[in-house]
Image 1 (cartoon, helix red, strand yellow):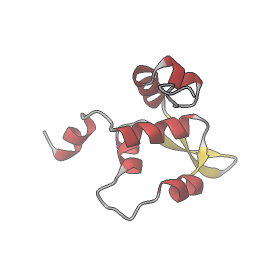
Image 2 (image 1 turned 90 degrees about the vertical axis):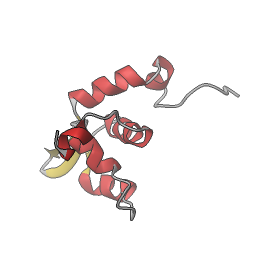
Image 3 (image 1 turned 30 degrees about the vertical axis):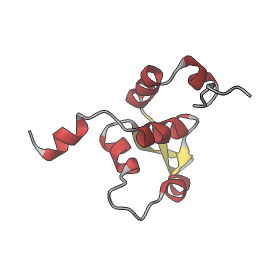
Length: 97
C-alpha cells in the first residue's frame, strides 16, 4: 500500500471534522477559506486532508473559486455529530447554562 492510500484510509481528526462542518454551513469563497484556515505549521494539514479524503471540493460560484462540502463530507458529519450538534451548529450542550 502506498503512502497516499494509507493516508486516505485513516479517520479524520477533530480539526478536519470542524473544518468540514464549517464548510457545510454553506459554500465558502476560496480566499476566505485560506484566510480563516491558514497555518504556518507544515504538519497541520487540515485543508489538504479534507480535500484528499474527498470531504470538501473546489467549485465555482458566480465565477469565483469556492469550496463546498461533498456528499462524503455531509455523510461523515451525519455519522459523527450528535443530533444536537447538527441542529445547533456543532455546539454541544454539556453545560446548558
